[in-house]
Image 1 (spheres, helix red, strand yellow):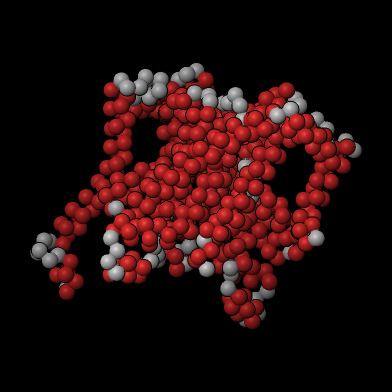
Image 2 (cartoon, rainbow over the protein chains, first blue to last red):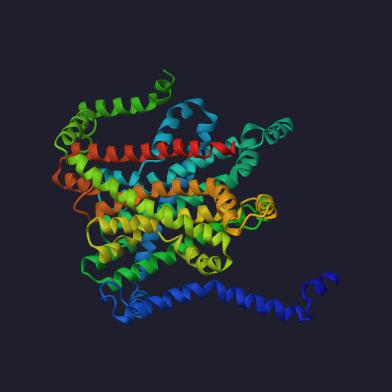
Length: 277
Length: 246
């Protein structure tokens, strides 16, 4: 009872105060986005830019709606997502396996450690023409490029994560008679999961960036390819529509990953902390 | 000697490359022997092609990154320090952060054409948000006790910002800049591959189109090496810059 009095010193009903607070806060969160969109529409209408440089937001929205109703949006988004996610999944699984192998087997560590430490900071995208030369311009080379880019953060995160697992956990598990395989699955991997997830959260947006670039370079269907086609025909409404579509896809992917993280780590103490990102 | 043992796997890969190509295990068209690539590299250094294109690329990356660091850093610290700025900018940052920055390539071309301007703008836009978020997280987590003590010792608000908040934001800010550095190379190369008349990416594309693959490999590895070297040099500098923390 004391707390309610403390929270509403001027006698304002608590429930109404909370609703008002939420409304104001919710509005503040979208206010600047709405402002940005309004400025966009206003700038385009003001005539300071040609419609080629900055098409009106309303025209872009009409174009997006047309993309959705003709099914182009579904095809392009589906293909881009398929490539990005296929590459990401291969990189995630392969990266965790490679990271585990490197932290347990000396020979794997010896062989891959310099490759990872030299390869991680390299701009892998420069190898794209080489990969096109080897694998052609279809999905295989796009997905290969994505895996090549996305695997490094996963491997690095996995190694750091496994190094950081507390020894006491391993000792107690072994002491209680756990076999090596059980230790791995039931102790090491769960304890390393937060860090590994952080690696995934770096790799996923990277997958989407690379998917879009490869599509732009190789053309064809996909969000990146569609933007490039529009740009080639000087169709700037199509280009801006592409950005908005890619932004939405990226936003949903990143948010989805954050939700997945919270789900998978619900047992971990970080779930109780307020998120910082 | 220790370095030799540590990096021997890379040597093994290099030897494997040379041998498999010389013996015809893989088509020399798809993978020209390493020695050919090296001699093509030396030729390109001699006739200046690699150097002029390289300088163009480095100028673009540096200009875009410098703008991103200055503006992004100021924005991030301002967001952590002034609540209204945060309320205004946080939703925009949140929406634009997950946007794959490569999607901006065609727009920057529409705005600024095929030359330096569009690449610099792209790198600036793409690299700004990691810097902003690093500065924001760093400045926000500056220790309350330090802020309190500074305030109780009579520091002005501006003084506190400069002497307490900025230094304690440094580690996370520098980390954000490292992400931005890697991103700047990715954006540079992809934008030059897609539309350019100069630069590393352009050179890779045109050599590939001509079928002079040994030269193309030489440029690809040059870019990859520069990205690696930039990261290592940056790490050395930041270690120096953060020496006061330890």
